[in-house]
Image 1 (cartoon, one colour):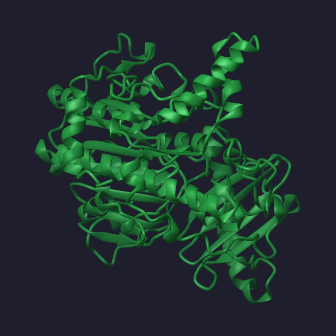
Image 2 (tube, one colour; image 1 turned 135 degrees about the vertical axis):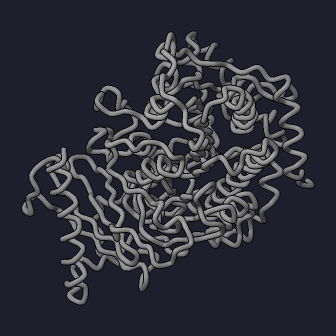
Image 3 (cartoon, rainbow, N blue to C red; image 1 turned 180 degrees about the vertical axis):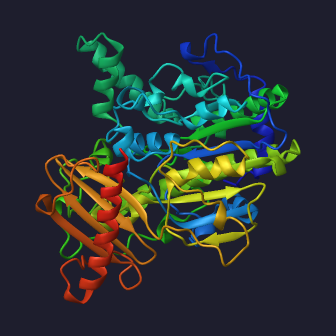
Length: 537
């Protein structure tokens, strides 16, 4: 199928926006919100905040030659790309709570997908909440928080204008089955399974859906449909509507756009699948567990095994069949190109309005994604493929077409955006402003030479530092957190990887005598980080 140009996609999407009604979720926390009394400074900049679920740096601007992502390239030329950026915790809930508050997971006390930071750490304010106090209008569409997606108003305190989720779709295709699937074949299968459940005496809708999903839940779909047949295309339509309202307000604004792809299942319009030849897709070159790495550092990718076309008996060390690997990676790539098209529509609209030079743009992934390396899939680890993310800035005060390899953290976004937008800083953040390296001065460096992150395995918490060349991880047992006393006797595992000499993490060098000095230096950095966090909490 011949690919539709992104300009044509924009025209189609704008046409759809005129007929697609949107749904505003209940948002009682916004009701009767007093308007900010802050006098708005003319120097404050708009903020376009682009959150992309499960996105690793599998992008052409990160050197991935097999990828077709021209709009990520376009944004890279507009600003600065950080090539060694890492999340605080490689799963949605903790990562998003961290970036939205500028604090580490041990302060938000969010270490899973179920905790709402408003309950676990009610003293913290969100980034948009702080901006409202500085005179901003704030709103969002799509997935910004994780827990907030089920909370009233998607964390209603964050928005001066209600957050929204579209519920109407291209009328040619209608609503997807189970929010994901649009092909006639898949819809027919689900309808048949729902009818089957009914015949078995299952009456409640939730139980009928659960019955159908256990029988049939494909991990991919390539529907020959429009961009607005799936949810992420609708997010773009809604974002353009929100821009109309924000610009009409006369205030500086914060607009969050949270795209859900390339999250599983990998569903995207067929034209994006057609960009890639499945037989030529690169598979992970290292598909085994690393030499000397503790087994508990791995997981058995239960998120993927929940799909009906994946063998649920697979465990750590087991490889998926090559054909399924190619299908999944193909789907992941197609979803990225689908999001790339949405990015192009947003950038075109910002240009059309003549506000590009008055808008700070930041784009980030909430964690990386394993695609077969170490026999792993999904996220949920402290390995490079799970922690490393795309992280990009553009706008006033940002150099053009620059890459920076400094190890940085996603929570650095919080103070960086405020400084770029000329907003009063919040004293809350654990991050550092990246503004010193966003210009063209080659002699400016950041004070910190590592990124800090963590991930939990049952009662063990793995804390790590990632420098330019190395990652060092300690696994602390007995529910240890950084606000507890550091005890050497509590450590049950160590990892050390050398990305210059072993970029695929094939060997854990923690016990190698040749790395004793490096290990000691990195251990000192990590211990200092943990002890300082204990003192500051």
